[in-house]
Image (cartoon, rainbow, N blue to C red; front, side, top):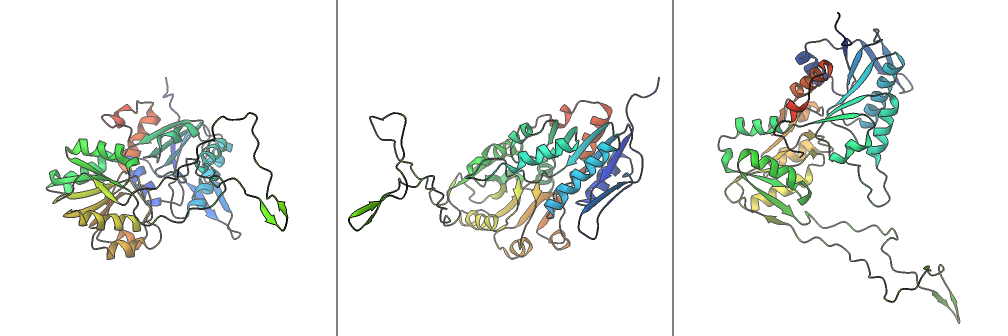
Length: 367
């Protein structure tokens, strides 16, 4: 009886070709023949150069600084495979774009849910990603999701490259990342600290009407011209509704100690580098010997290279290769990139062979 498994094909988009080559090398297959390019009108065109009928297709496409182009390119590739009768389509997205837009803030929309719906409607049957910004993003997808962890690789980097790692202190940049930081600290058997308060002067709040007081009438001469009709309620209240209490964060403080220690700031994404540099200076003022910045996804937007190289407080930036770096960033002596392609290769192999994925999450908490 023949092998019931469908043949496997790996396709790569244009966002991160080096990572796709590394993953394919670990899997032991060559990347499939596909043409992905932009025509003269800047529209994305995808042409499959081989038959994928009845095959299991893995599409490797991460987020980069050309994020909107990467997203539509992925959707087009998925749809092309769907209409070419692929048996199963698995999207391998090391860094999921728009993952930070997963909550309703003021009058903004939850864009990550929109992206999830677009991907599922385009035709993906399974998603492999790494270190989602929030676990709740799982629920946005109408397909199975495997959220891999980079923590084994980042922890191994600490063990291999910091001889006196027992003198480290894991630092949470803000209280919301305490759970992730405490997980790393428990595995390294070290202490952790939490930064609390505002990093710099809070920007002026936008006046959007939600916390403004009731409108007052405008007096013109002897008459009164109301701005709007006063609010009415279906019933009367014996006591007035309590006013909204504005939240004011305290000045910057550190819960814990980094005196004479190596401080490792940890978060899931490094995008704007300036807050990291300012926090590094704050930790040096608190007595830290060295300050590292560590995160799975290094977007490093804007003038990140200039800020990192010129910072006297930030000693090293440790990231993984889920997001492609420009040549200047990749050559910086302060930036160290950890390869996680083996994790994605093993996930692809297990999914293709119908094996359990639990081994990839053994002793790893939901960071």
